[in-house]
Amino acid sequence: MSVFENSERPYVSVPVDTDFEVRSTNAMCVNQSELDEPLYTKWKYSLAGILFGIILIKSEVISWYRIQEMFRLQSFHMYGVIGSAVATGMLSVFLIKKFQVRTIQGEPIKLEDKKFNKGQIYGGLLFGFGWAMTGACPGPLFAQIGSGALAVIVTLFSAIVGTWTYGLLRDRLPH
Amino acid sequence: MPQWLLNPWPWYVAGPLIGLTVPLLLILGNKAFGISSSLRHVCAAFVPAKIPFFQYDWKKEIWNLFFVFGVGVGGYLAAHFLSSGAAPVIDPRLTAELSTYGIQEAKGIVPADLFSWGSLLTTRGLILMIGGGFLVGFGTRYAGGCTSGHAIMGLSNLQWPSLVATICFMAGGFIMANLILPYLLTL
View (tube, rainbow over the protein chains, first blue to last red):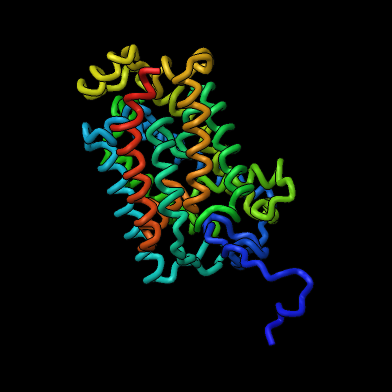
């Protein structure tokens, strides 16, 4: 007999969490062991972020014009940046796996597999629309604001509202 | 400051540097590169509103917020100390098309005619900033990642769902830029 037959509440299937950017140890997130580092050590991620932000500006990938050129096939620049970034990332991950590289704290490096769901299609298309409109994905939004385009704060705020709305409607969306 | 540092960096310099963010974050603390989840953490921290999607220990993911704070600081540093101040070189076909919508010669990284406090009072500015931003936040979370999480981190780890997502990002962008945006810009 199924455990659900006698329960008072009807069994409702909850969509499996396929959001692998979040790794907290709780029901709706991917469970992954992680050392609890003290808060002040997190500044190393800000340093990494500073480097990343400088690269975003200097490579002009945060430029609305470069994004328009990419989607109009008027420039190779963005394809070169993304292509060589992926190639470098692939080689890095290959080497990390091959030599079982550890973190600076000595923890083995673990990578989650991503599971397919239809959200990657629907959500991907919607994000593509937004990318071409704003000329920015989430990372560049922060870099644009830092560089002085303060009105982009409105776009970032709207993106947060969009994320919140997704969370609200999640169970009713096809996945 | 040497001139090559002040000029825009070519793709074959910038691309590999962006790619190296993947091993950097993994080695610093087993973090998978991905930026759009920072938006989810902001929701979880400030307006969880009993929505199950935001019921998790966001403090465990706080590294992501430290990272995006750094991205903003990096943007400030690059724009103020590593910039030649020259106007970006834009494809003449794009310049010509934009001028038909009354968007003038570019100076910064976004056209001031579309993205400024004043343009929030225009129909097209409102649609691009509020509507576009909403789609970025909604779409990335629906897809489970953005350009960094899927296109760079996911493809680096040979994840085929990330390839599907990346293809859809590009397809959406092509549709918007070529079929819908020309209409939006006339509003």
